[in-house]
Image: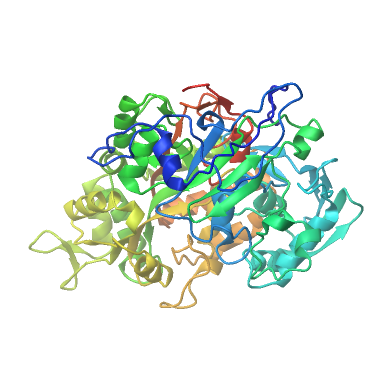
Length: 628
């Protein structure tokens, strides 16, 4: 599945006027009030100026017989590129330190493409640079076919040798992002010919290709051109040299200029997708990644049509912004849950190994004290939905939720009940002291509870619910840095914590595996092995289930797979390994003033997250509105 567009449009030339960031911002729009507060906006100026790199060369010649057409605001797509200036604006190395951030910033929207894309909404895999793959029956290898006619943007063919070179270099260079992953899994890559290759694995993994080359959200593995990178030091090479035409990629946009004031990419009219008939050209002629301020001032720019793509609002902010500018839209047209799922869940993490939460009765009591709907309503203005299973509401997971509903009905995890709190705490040997708080052997229970900066809205709600139920809890909110939070949580020093748990996007295994004891801290005080696997849960019965699931491809119709999932879910709910409270739904706002066709719940062709690689499908789909 891919998206094509109407042919026959004129080519364009870049406006030769020298632009600075200030002149561009002035030209973007008229004075606007700061969103939900007063703010000095940019002075008004004649509209229509587009962001342009200084000293830029012409992008292309006009069509024969047609007049040159300047790149204006109307055919420019503007991204939020940072607060005051871009950091490392000329570093286009996707694998050196901080590489994933660069990929998810401008790289995956411009000159990098991927073997596959993925629609999280329905679980469909979208072949791109590759046209097919086959996992071996023993899960020890993957055969892949490259799409015919793919070229790098310098005209060099994209071949299986580029894949072999990239994966083996990552495997052998520990300093690079994803090196440890490739070292663990990739034995080597066998090249059959330019179009066909086999990835040979060190151990069986039915999910390897999906996890690293299809899903493309938390992990995005891009292939690099061997003829450019083979003589470079990957740990220091920044992949930027305008005289050499760098960076070189396969994508439909090429770099025009980069500086702390902005990155500018112009449409490549020689893109392989157009030349082979695979896709028609994007109607975006320029993408600009510009520092546009912080917080309310940045949102004010979106209200003023100065930003086009994927800014996150709180539900109330969005309602106010949409009232000022109806061209601002999110995933759902109706609220209060305007936002889209993202495979992450708001959870209350519990230390099941050390401290008071090691008692399952205390964990069950804590869960019974939580009113999930109240949490959603008060913390996020009704902007998400309560959940009890650790699975996103992406469509691919629907069958598994249905298969586990009877287990949910058995344990009733969403039963907020003081009577249940009282009975479970009594079973754990606690009684209320003179102040109405739970105590044991004369010692009041005062759990260490933590909350990171970005989840602050939940802290006072959770604290109030727990205190009302008799838990003497004060949530420690990290207002400036999350380092102390993760240090306490990942070393087993915290008793409970509010956290986002990211995992399952199409099958339950994605999250259920995180409760395997292999992720635990070796001892209290030592860091665990995965950022979201903090429960310190240690149950050999559960580990056996996950070990078996590791070797089975997911399928809601495979009884061998679903029986294991059901058993794991039963243990998860029985033992309250952690408490899933609700889904993380971001109100990602797109501006329809200059561009239309963005993904939404009525046209769910891709998830609405510009951080994820599949946003490229939106960049090839959107249409200009011809708005002034």
